[in-house]
Length: 213
Image (cartoon, rainbow, N blue to C red; front, side, top):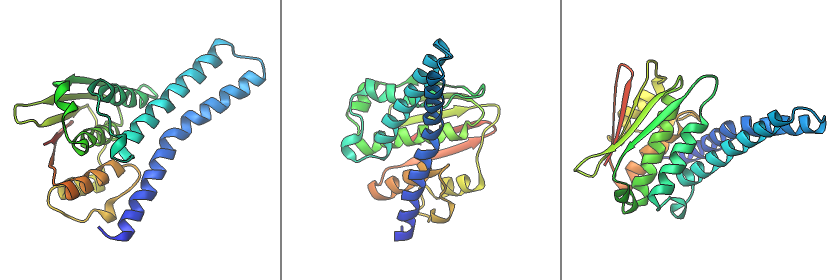
């Protein structure tokens, strides 16, 4: 990937993080203003607590996804907790995404950090694809692969997303398809390219599957 592409990835990561955090920061600011007016009581307290929980969940998840290798979660219980709390933080306006884990968590503890990062990035991608809500099932198989399956009545996939999917395992150039919305897919493609890991994607009428391994 060219130097310009790496720059584009960095810019998109920053944009994505700011986009995902700004709403909760704004809510906390609104709560502080209400407190200053001495009105609201429990409503204000709940607003601040919920917004703080969302920010905490997203920052921990982003650190695991985008930080250095030392940031990758090694404890399997922490791994699942951080992933679940991030997905829960995406709920808004009636949108809800439920996760179901059918994985031998001890396997995750011994996986390569980049392998586990691929799982988190796949979950982040799935959170964007399930823009109208849905369900995510995470399971493993005898070959050591992890499958992340998302299902919903409506899914959200752009033409750029599809192009990145097509290029994931064939070393194609994704630079012109990168955006803040699909930045997780772009990073997945770079991990695959650099560490020679594999990730397969399939989509069929409301069902999207990521298979890492």
